Amino acid sequence: MFYIDRVKNRPLAILLTLISFTIITSLDYLSGSEMSFSIFYLIPVSILSVSRTSNKHIIFSASLLAAICWLYVDYNSKEYSSLFFPFWNAFVRLIIFITVGLLIYSFRLRTDAFKQSNKQLQDLNEEKNRFIGMAAHDIRNPVSGIYSFSDLLLSDKNSKMNEEEVEIVQLMKSLSQNVLDIIKNLLDVATIESGKIELNYKTQDYVKFVQEQIYINQLLANQKGINIKLQSETPEIVADFDSHYMTEVLNNLLSNAIKYSEKNSNIQVKISSKDDHILTEVIDKGQGIPLDEQKKLFNYFQKTSTQPTDGETSTGLGLAIVKKIVTAFKGQIGVKSDLNKGSNFYFTFPVNNMPK
Image 1 (spheres, one colour):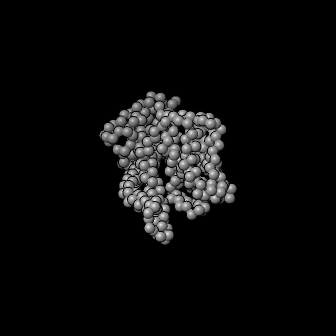
Image 2: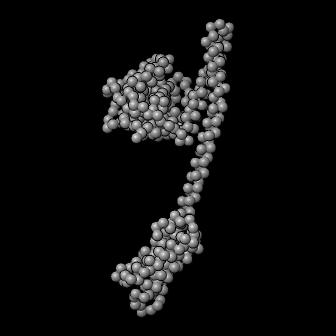
């Protein structure tokens, strides 16, 4: 009886409903007044209302049948001083059956409409991701060419460019690098949102891995006189993680810390472990982030009122990508920040993350 809602053939669904009414009516009649089964008449009506083979006419007919079955049992098992009372009771129950059936039917229609809309949105989102991926790939090649040629011109010792021309080429290189960063983020978004992110876990020393990422980002930090320090509770923590995507997480957090830190300041990276989870904190002494803006940080294209300290650019995609990756690592990410005191971006992930 409880599988009527899965039946796609309408005659079969009606047949199962009739069988259900027959069973319930028989039980109700045989039990007499000592054990009433009147409430059970709602079960087939409710299930039929959920079935995708039903409509309002079928629900009304099922409700009428339920009321007639109940009236038959009630009239033959009890004594009434007037026929008005059993028919009145049957009429009231008919209204209840119809009301409940139509409410469930209406809810089912709304649910179906919601599922259909959700399916359409998913299709549009997949189409959007495909378009972004194709567009980003097409744009990346010519922009990479501009970056490579401008870098070649600047590194050419025999170049006869004057100061103004050198400045223009440097600007071309800087702008093309910014565009390449945006394209990379867009490709990451398209990959993550399409569900095609594949994590290749490897058991390795996480502390050593973080040291390597700090070394790479220190080269960028040197331009602002910023020193990145590592603090780990143990010299080695062996864990399972994907090096490629973990690099993206750390590079995003470290580059953001560098962008929003004042010159000649310090950035601290803390590593600790608890309950088989690793906690990584990237702490800066920058401008901080307003409390009402912190909740939006991990959404796409979200920027805060806090500005980079040396004119750097931001796409508003980095932290959203980081959150998606950390979530894929079965971890969590968050931020603690006070205005004019700096920010602490932290994330956790399990030590033992190797798929079984």
